[in-house]
Length: 213
Image (tube, rainbow, N blue to C red; front, side, top):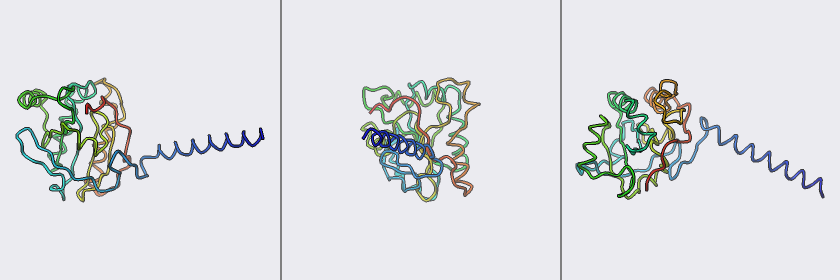
């Protein structure tokens, strides 16, 4: 009986290790993130920008799209904006015709939520250059995509399939000095999909501040 118990424990540990190994191989396997999944159609949504203009994801069929969850007061977001890293990536992508949608899911009264007038000033101060900054204060789209942190990044290809989801890079810190040493997963994913190649790293655990639903 004691021998059978030991065998059972060993089997359980081996199964757990195998499961963890499978999860770690995000570069080659479909991974579900919230209500979306890698290599599957990105769910459609409609949100308004600061001027009330509606942006519908499915209207961008034929184009590559980046979704960036943002909260300007988050130290991890400040790292990428104070350094100019995020703006440079936005400019680099949009110059190539990529649609870049920054989305704020912060609820009224929570960190990252601003009145429209203040938000326009903040975007100008940050020198952000996305295609559009979209308001999701009820959190519907954030929860649909399983957005957990700011930043949390998603790359969608020209046929509307999600090809990357997760961290912006492999340096989960608030240190600006880490940026030049980091591997930028968003840039790598965009480079792959826009050149007809498979994305090597399809998902990574996002880092940053929790989305303030």
